[in-house]
Length: 115
Length: 111
Image (cartoon, rainbow over all chains, first blue to last red; front, top):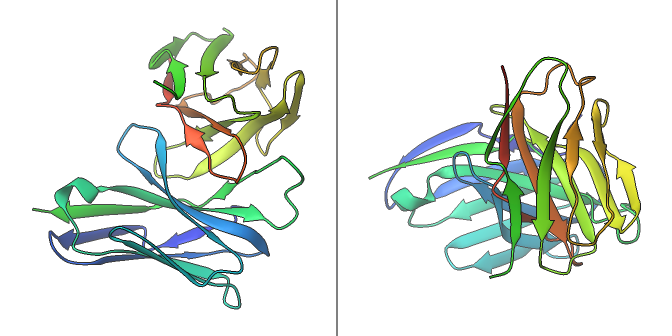
């Protein structure tokens, strides 16, 4: 089964509102990453948070990580229509192997931002 | 202009045919990956390669084959043994640190 599970599966908000997506995982991790995918395109890396970090910011993005609950959240503030996309969390296992950098992806949250 | 390219954008496969998807990167990355994405689903790992002339099976390798003869190239062959090949195929690479860089994808359809 997949490591990460995003919640909700779909989210629809008005432009200017904040969007929050959650990710839960099952085993110990080295890091957790968030990616964005526009329809029919490849994934784009947004942010990486290591297991010893609790919060990280990048522009309008804020990611939190709670390793005790095995969960993470992605907050997009002041959303724009251009933020419409699917968002995936991906985890790198604690014992992924030297040089492996394998990621396990969740099923994603589909975000729609209405102008 | 650095990045990962995949070709073709769309590929049609006839019954019993093998088809090859191309993935090339000029990022000088050692590790490369192939994923399969089905509608409304996340990515599932097919094969990965950490170094030239070496590759490992992922979670859903059956019906697929790969080669890694050059650092820049990691082609994926979808064989006739793959009974449900219709999907979006994504190639990625990483140079370290864990961040993966993705190509634009190839959509494979069965005639």
